[in-house]
Each structure stands twice: as C-alpha cells, then as structure tokens.
Length: 123
Image (cartoon, rainbow, N blue to C red; front, side, top):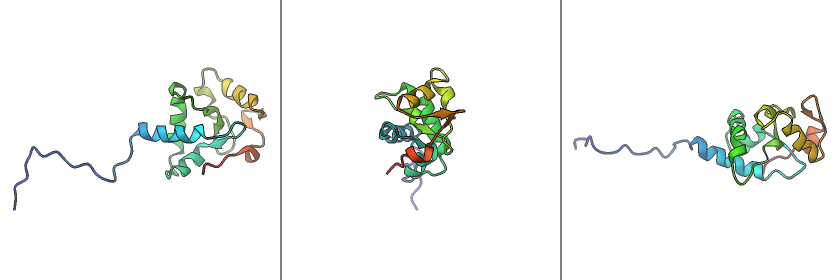
C-alpha cells in the first residue's frame, strides 16, 4: 500500500455547488430576458434554474442587482402573489412601483394587479 503524500492537494469534488456569484449571474441572465410589460417571481426563476427551493437566494441576487452592468430589470421580479416585497432594496421605496407603472402596470397596496395575466414563465 502506497503512503499518502501529505503535500498532495485535495481533489475538487465534481458535484461541488456553484458559488454564490455564479448563481447570481445565472439569475441576472434570466431576469434580463423578462420582456418589458411582463413580470415573474423569485420562485419561478429558482425553479427554472433547477433550484426550486432557492427563491430566497434569487431575492438576494435582486438585492445586489443595482450594481450590475449591463442593468438588470429587478423591478420585474415579484413574490409569488405579485407583492412588491423587494421595494425597500431600491434607491427609494417607491422606485419599484414607479418602474412597473411606467411599463403600464397598476399597483394597489404594494400588489401588482392582474399578476397572472402579465406573468412571464422562464423557458
């Protein structure tokens, strides 16, 4: 039996999870594909990326999106009920609603009206 060399580097696992940065980049790619006038949810993006239980991570990516170039239309990502839960992460709390209204949406009590009608499913 050959002795183990203590200076050998451990081999990386093939099944290693992607870093947070690479996950965020994947999220940004999907969000940039949302057509103007459409919206999607954190969960729909997570499911599309094969990480159905990572909707919260998609939210964290949206919180960081303001620093990314090219720009990411984070205002088009809402919670599963059409609520503007991420609005406090914009430069001012009304900006998310203003951006959605500029695209023709109606917001009432921080909820997008006709959410199902304008929902975009990533494919």
